[in-house]
Length: 370
Ligand code: HEM
Image (tube, rainbow, N blue to C red; front, side, top):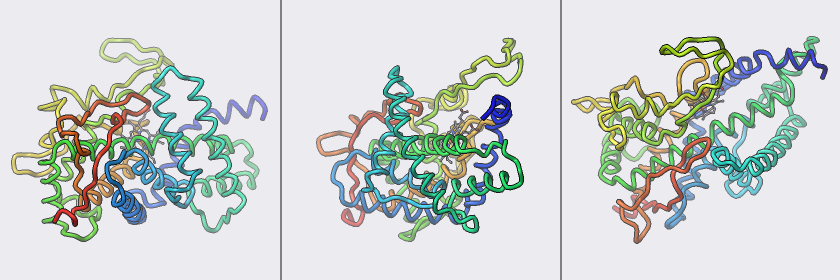
């Protein structure tokens, strides 16, 4: 590649790749039926794992389930939880997100390199079996677009192999740990506050009964909806984002020169004491009006806002709702034997995304309980 190509390819690459990912997420059914089916199917695999467990650390099963939703979108298929390559890729990605919050650059580089190698191999496998008439996922769509552009003589587009790899790595990094840490916080909070867990289960039983929860049930489950929003607000998994000012700007009297790195603190909205009645307490009432109806809040910005906001917001919301409700229909989450609810620690481990400190939970099957 010559210097001129490098310059042209760098320009607007992020915009084009963001748009391409969004279009593909929409076409693959983000917020729609197809993703709903995938998540429901994956919930069942997760329920099967929880059924077999006594006291257990939620990290691996929840990360594998959530990662499989991204795998289905990116590659077109899910992986078994005992597939060693899959396990090590997800475990390594989790380690990498934690290393991003530590000074251990060498370990992070090593881990990122190992995962890039695995993803390069997966992409190669898809390239070898590509059928342009039947795209299995994001990678296939990207490769087809690349081939079409090259066939029309455009050898200088944003659709080149390094950009494909970076897009795949970004989707995994952005989509796995954020969602799985939020869901794990949700289960931990239910074990810590059993009266809130009970209320969710009572609402689910009276509105949905024992059938599978569907996305369309959400509007009839105001308490459950409020609990899930409060989990996201409380978990605050991406408290700090860093971007560069895209132009000279004066903000609240301060001049910020184009290119200056700017830290955006989502915590300043999610934990704003002027906005939330109990900013540092887990309180589903933040999202309920006096009559018990769900109420939206302007300061609820876990996906950020504006042109760099989360590409996967619709998918993440669907995952949180379906995984959480399906699990609560089947299980009561409790502290492990010998640990009290008060002793469950809500402190976060710092990394690129915040996640709960290491802990174990019991998932008691509700059919055993009755
Ligand atoms: C609870 C789950 C999630 C949370 C809290 C979350 C939060 C965020 C936030 C705050 C940003 C903005 C980052 C920034 O400004 O630098 C972001 C960006 C992004 N998210 Fe998510 N996210 C979640 C799930 C997902 C999922 C499931 C996907 C996968 C499709 C995803 C893909 C992305 C991508 C690709 C970006 C970068 C967008 C860009 O740079 O233009 N996220 N996310």
